[in-house]
Image (cartoon, rainbow, N blue to C red; front, side, top):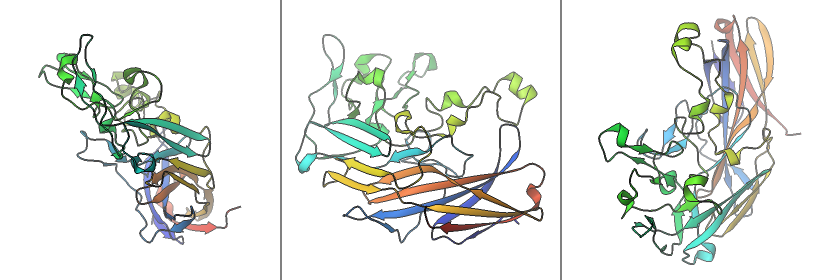
Length: 334
């Protein structure tokens, strides 16, 4: 019962969930890992990464940024495009500032990288010091704008940036920033605070803008809907990529990718793997055929590798207990 027969070279896992109306969902995730060669071609990685049931963090959960979001989730409205990596100065020459760029199909995004600097006091408040030249900087939200000032034990006298509580630059009183590191990453235009944290990585479910989409868990929910999702729950809360890294529609595989100053060589081009999966589920003595969508793309140029997560979801109203197995196969990409 509830068995996966996986005939692909990729890793697969399954779980049960419920949709907003309480209907059981049989969720299957297939995770494919490919190495990126120097010429831009892809090769099946010897070590295939496992689909995740729970998130993984850069450090301790709750006080560090999200490294990988869980893969076994309900269907996403579109594909998440993510990058975990390092910014490299052009030609390996120490630089005070430079741009890095991520392009995946219709998604294109630039971030400005600034060398290490501190907040210093001035006549008009705090400002970042002159940047030190750098050759490379890890791209994590701890080095972007944000933060959580808990210097005062009274929560009323604390300040948090819900967009990035682990970042740097937020304080109740600006003089508290003096001597602390200023952000290494920012958007090419706009102020640090208004533009918000700049990065390519996953956003935790407790951070804005995801947390505002969870729905309202109030007394009315407790009385009328619990344990179902709130009536105002939004499926976009499942998306963990920054909003400017989401295509309007799901990616299909085969889209061109270009990375600029995200590898020591300065430029890397390749195409997402083309994968076509079929799912055949035996349930209550009948056969259900279903397909998957590309839910997540994770590019990790420091390996270098690309990970794609394909998910499928089968609604099971009253027959979930009779689901026996799902057979996963791969067909030639058309």
